[in-house]
Amino acid sequence: MRDYVHVSDLARAHRLALDKQGVFNLGGGQGTSVLEIITLANRICGPIEPRFDARRPGDAAVLVADISRARRDLKWEPQYSLNDILKSTYQAVLAGPTSL
Image (cartoon, rainbow, N blue to C red):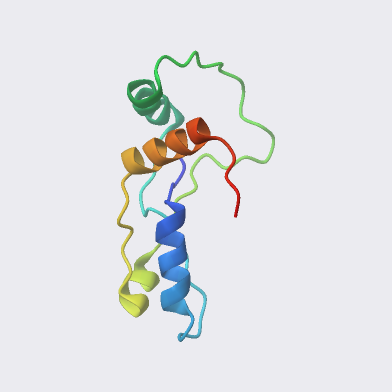
């Protein structure tokens, strides 16, 4: 289980935190399994052939951010869904590198 958050949500949280003091955990606030990601990616990107391997040494089984402090102190909530994250990432990959 992993926690995913859109880069735009992270940027917004960083802007909100500029005037605050403290440490804030940021994430989507919920866990998603790799199989759930593969299922959603199959719908967005087309068929993906997963390869199953053993967990790498030191990998945690679950990594999910506790975003309660960010919610309370920054009045921040992630706006983008996992579907949005995968779609925008896929579109960015299709668009290729961009210049700044």
